[in-house]
Image (tube, rainbow, N blue to C red; front, side, top):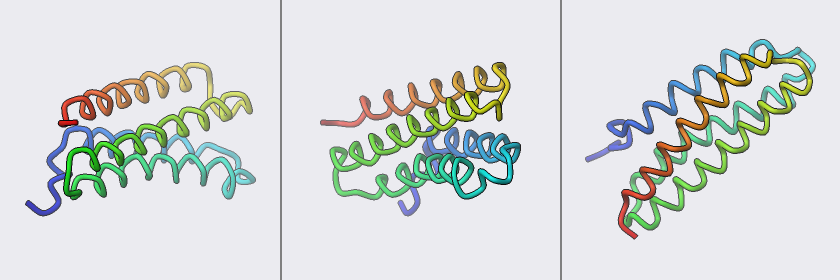
Length: 118
């Protein structure tokens, strides 16, 4: 099936989280446009895009490699959120809520990775 990634729950969840990240990053100062805003958006896009790209690989092992890249990109998103909190671009509550969502997505990625054959 072409574009099978569109059926994966993890892909759909990653798209939802991407929207959240784009929305919250609009609050960042204009002088962060080409730095933190751009970085967090590239990282969240990498989460989504690696799920898609890996889904059409010849083996589950190869697909797992792309899912691990998604997971490391999600870690990059979290680091960007930590920086945003440190710079007072986010409130403590906004940060906490985003970290919870990132952890949920990360757990889903890990579960999906573990579900694939070795």
